[in-house]
Image (tube, rainbow, N blue to C red; front, side):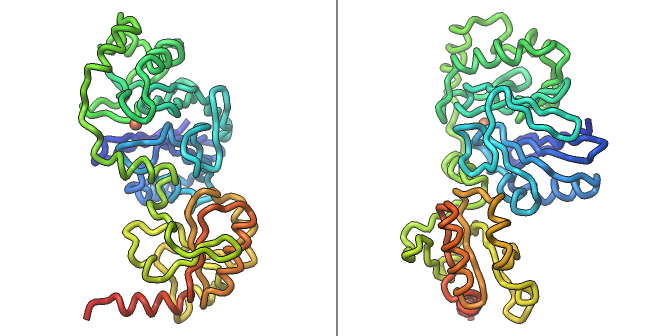
Amino acid sequence: MLLRQLYDQESSTYTYLIADEATREAALIDPVKEQVARDLKLIQELGLTLVYSIDTHVHADHVTGSGDLVAQTNAESVAAHGGAPCATRHVGHGDVLPLGSLRIEVLSTPGHTDDSLSYRVGQAVFTGDALLIRGCGRTDFQNGDPQALYRSITEVLFTLPGDTVVYPGHDYRGFTVSTIDEERVHNPRLSGKTEQEFVRIMTDLKLARPKRIDEAVPANRVCGRTAMSFDGAPKASEGYFQLEAEALLGQAAPPRIVDVREPQEFTGELGHIEGAELVPMADVQGAAQSWPKAEPLVLVCHSGRRSATAAASLVALGFEQVANLEGGMLAYNRAAASAIPA
Ligand SMILES: [Fe+2]
């Protein structure tokens, strides 16, 4: 197995790239939105194809890169049943995700959050925030439960072979990897501790509220694609929202934008919106099969007519947050020009 441990300094998050060396199929575990470009470059340099973007849980301390990765590759986004609704595949304990000749086994390890999963691949286990090196994830928000975490660690993770290598979701002190045996013996929260003692340790932690929780949790429930909601925008009778160009321009973190024009229009004189994906009208229905239905989408064309038809077809397919950019690129360019200060 090819394995790379990547780090986001801002949130002290580890992202893992794993791949089958023969088929070059790859998975990222816990990608960070701000590091998506780094991760994609590495995947390309190593000649890999991203098949899964996996989250161990809905994070409170950083925003996932899953939505961006799914938009830019053919990968599936994977989360727990009861985890991020935007994921394209939901898994639970005992499920296996094949990756070439590798098997990614799903272990349910709730307690840090109620949707926390660990993933075991051969002799490695990726524990997210359930088990950290000489510590564990906190249990005081997002339906955290110290009793559940104690059982997840002692009955699920600590029953793995002792030489299983532990790859945690974070480290704040410079540790990188550990083993099940090492944590069984040296983890101060668990070694020789009863469930009651563990619960007392966790209850007495009195940690500060995570700085990014109010932003990160809702963003992660839409796979990090946007914090935008179309609430307040008028709805067409077909069920899609009518979004004004000014409203789109005002977004600090714009949602997924799908441009349904033809390639020559996309690169033509009206240009296109930065970050927009080109999916010509005829391909929308097919491409949409792999798009998460809860993720907000804005559809764009020349004048807003083709995109309205596409928006209506996506609503009919069950998409919940679809908007049509009113007036299309014509209106967008007008609004963008007038938004530039004189
Ligand atoms: Fe977490």
